[in-house]
Length: 456
Image 1 (tube, rainbow, N blue to C red):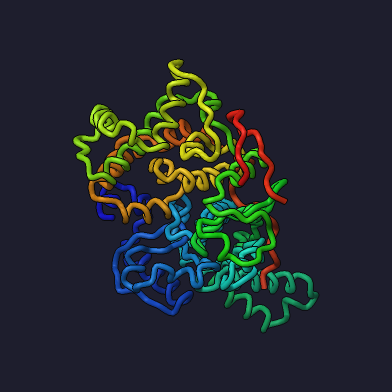
Image 2 (cartoon, helix red, strand yellow):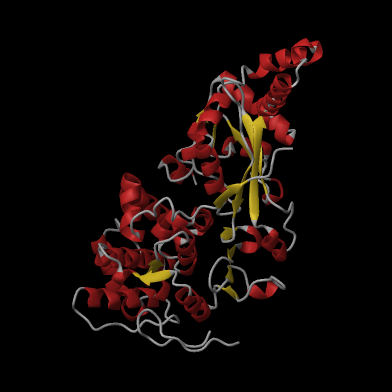
């Protein structure tokens, strides 16, 4: 993984913690949340305050995420809002943390100037021993305070000030006045500079989770469903149907279409379809050549064409299907009838615009895993897992490509592949709500290509 780190493809955009004051604040927060400590004097943290260096030191990548379902966080600076989230267990977690920081940025800026802010993404369950437990997770509540309890004490002081103003003899109550003075030494004048960090709740009906091999749960749709990376037979009874695994290609294609979640890339406006198809074909060729231990040369398009000629009829079905579509796009061939049973089918789709765009593109990356660019952009956890199993030749090719073609213009690449970024009202982020007060068989269907799909 060192190659990815050196190229900025892993652990990029983390926040450096090196000043003695911030290191000590982090240590206090770490002891407060976990009872653990670190001896490191400089390290990096993600949006949640997780540090890969400390995780390595402790031998625990989930030291801020016990049981993987109630993520704790440490905020040293509001700059963490642009950092990634590492070791994701739920696709909604980063969106929740980012919204929490943005909604309370002024307060958090003031609070982190004096102390670390620590908290937790509180689910309604504390363990996920069975897949069915995941369906009890509908709301996540964020509770946070400084390690010194500034928010708690400010609430106490505000209540005492209110009592002092309401009681006619309040100015004679020496005990009350003494309590206010003592709290004010810590919080400052809350009548002029209020300190407030209210609990916030977020609804999460649709999400991906890393638990049980990886599950996509969609509940807030006209046709709900569950898609699992592992065999569906091992999940047991679930409250949502249908339940599909990645082998149910026809069923998944039918479900995506009925919910209007995908569109063929050839129908996407303002998209250089030919360039996208060629690049997908290059990725497929590299994988095929690597599997056969063929020399990639410099892995230029000319080198890859030589490999394609050498493979001939042995070219992967994914490559041949995309090649037929490319010939049609360029006016050199007939319209291909690619059904959902064809290995190239899901490579020809992208998510429709809307709040679930990123989640659906994440799912499509699993269904078209040889497209390593989409895999890296939309599903980094799976990308890193896949990367570990590749040969060094393929690792080098992919790392060089992503550094050269993606890192130089992330936004442009995402826009070209997936369309314009969703508006603020379309982001696939959990819906924020007011938090609690503190204290039968599938029928044959016609797909987007106009081709009749088989039964799932």
